[in-house]
Image (cartoon, rainbow, N blue to C red):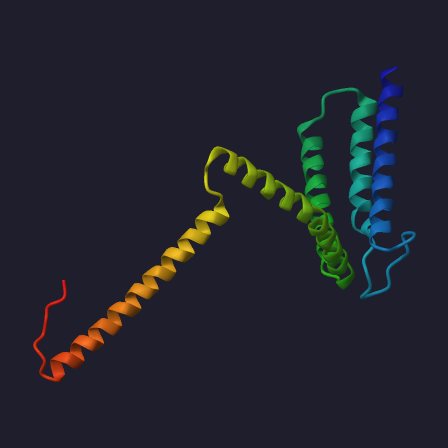
Length: 181
């Protein structure tokens, strides 16, 4: 009974790995797993098939023995996982470095922004209405007020400069000088 369950789990795992591989191949634009020519796109299966075979053999051994895994087997499993991660890193790095991937990511981002823009606008309108109902200024109102204060400060500075020039002219012309407060 346990032997049958173990075999079913192993078969299910193999099936999931195979389906995942096919999904990656479809995503990368390959119909099947052709043998890559030199300097062409790499086949994900070619990268990690040896690692998967090694891992399946180790799991088969554990499942058929029905005993706790030995430290040696666990070290092999860790090595398998490390190699698997490295292989997938290479595959993903290569896939992400293509113009096709960049175009797909651009389309994905554009679609996301097209969908999220109306949602963001509606949320901002809701927040502004809530703040108005509470008598609290919105961010836009605070920003506008800060802009107006800055403009008033600039005008005051300009008036001070003009007043200083007028006082300098009066002083240079010999007229009695009055102190500015």
